[in-house]
Length: 287
Image (cartoon, rainbow, N blue to C red; front, side):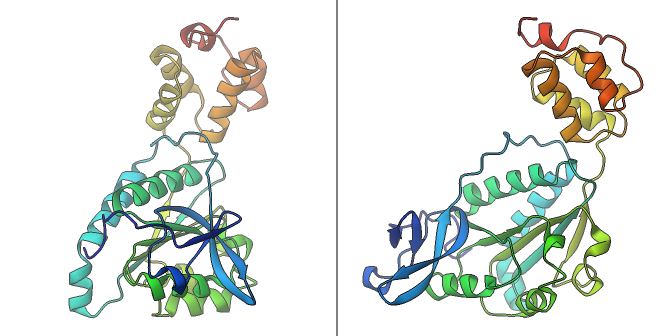
């Protein structure tokens, strides 16, 4: 797999936390990790820079089977680069995660990012608007031709209308898109133009992250420390709630010591009777 899995050399140069490539220090490599694309001024030149990002979201929990499925496909994708090349195909892959707000798309991204950095010594770039991305990706490729790159775009619907042509030009381009994975998310699939979402080689797979099943709700609640009895009871009565809403129940009752019944009423849970086991007692928190 070429240089996949090799540890990076010394980061090229740093100015106010922004990493950038410079010929004065040789080729070098960026350290594996998460970066925001950010320009840096060096003398009279404006260069593409890469600002390390520390994700401060909750500890991601694997609550949707889609995570394992996509992670396995990405693993196969990187292991089969030689096959792509032999067939004459660009070695790139695109995923669009879609579904209602709060159902685990961001959590899925965090897990994929973590695995990408740890398993492939990869660079994860955050793409938050439709312009200039090709400039940064191509710049990396000038220095690291086959370094694994994951481009993450949360809420792509927020800028797809304004930058549709630029996005298409980037996704259809060949420069830089080698050993490359795009993972985008949207709450509004209908707002994504058909020529992006329905065109393999631009977006290869649409992945639905829907409202969690009872099994998934139980897995989430147990994963954050709720006892099996309370988690099982709460999972049964919260049909239709998102992961974010389940989190709010735990935050309100455990962290903020609010009574359970009003919290369930606020979230439109019909059954507000006491749980089989207390969230507070079973998690070791005082009332």
